Structures are given as C-alpha cells and as structure tokens.
Amino acid sequence: MELKHETSKKSTRFYLLDDEKEIGEIAYAHVNDGRIDIHHTEIDPNYRGQNLGQQLIDAIADYARENNFKATASCPYVAKVFGKTTQYDDIKV
Image (cartoon, rainbow, N blue to C red):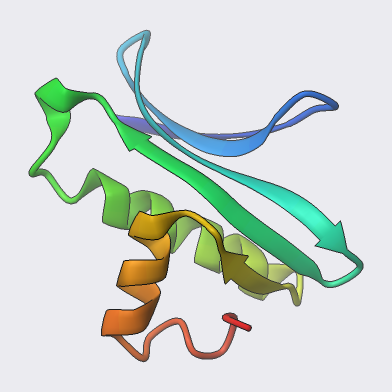
C-alpha cells in the first residue's frame, strides 16, 4: 500500500493506493492561517477492518504537526477518534 498527498485547487487530501486502486482517503480544507478542517474520511468497503482510517488520521496529524497547524474535525469518524484518545490533543482545536 502507498500513501499519497494531493494538494490542488480542487482537492486537498491524503489517499491510499493498493497497486493502482484508490482504497481510502481523508480530505481537509485550509480554514485560515494555521488551521485545517478534516471533513471527510472514506475507506473502500473491501478494505475495512485493517486500520486504514487510523493510518490516514495519523498521516494528516503528522502533516499538521510538521506545518504547525491546528485541526478541527467536521468528519464524524475523525471527531470520534479525536474524542477517544489524547494522542491528537496537540493539534485539535
């Protein structure tokens, strides 16, 4: 599996590829200087149960830390994960 990061005018996201097939993504938007909103996470149903959503959250958390961003989570899945652990307290708003 390969993790990619896309930043274009139409999309800002991390996504996972299994060979050439896209199997998951986590999308975010820059809200203002220093803050991003994580608004969408999706995993292909055939790949669920493999902690791929967690890998995507970890990737975006690392990105936020490297760039000194804070993050909000309007995505229900990410909000749930953020609420269950303290490991993202340094980035979440």
